[in-house]
Image (cartoon, rainbow, N blue to C red; front, side, top):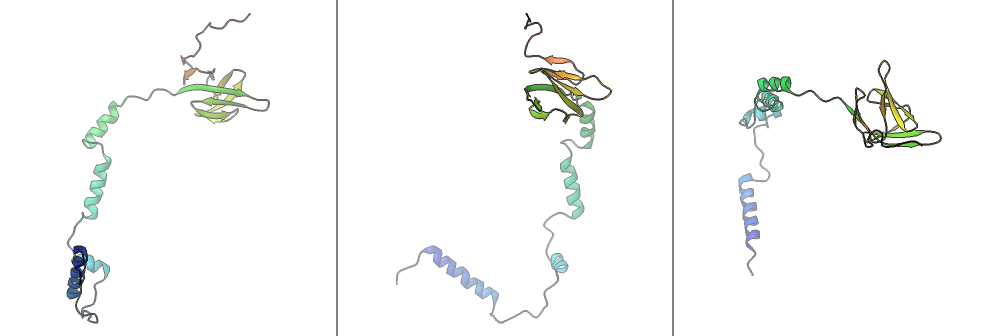
Length: 161
């Protein structure tokens, strides 16, 4: 009879060892099996207690350096610059108009950044009651205060005849 490959011999040896350790097939242990909470108490603790786990999770949420550094970092953090609005494009139709502000497509009358979009011929006005309108022309970048930050076309470049 030819010899079987080594992995088959190993598998047969492990199966025989498992049968020897398991004991006779019909034998059952006389002691009843413990319930789940009791069974858990029989095993040694491998992981942390719930209190230790909660403190580890809380420490993970803090930035490196602890709570003192988090408070100092928040106090020294630079203030966010005011929002900037850029009119990327404008499409005027017979029944409606569309503007693209900061890459978002908006229709006439829609709200955007707390303001209402009003599309006129060649410009878009962002209105908020009690404040000055922010006027945008295609390609312009305007701050929340209404100051033109960047304009694609320099002032005085076009002349009417």
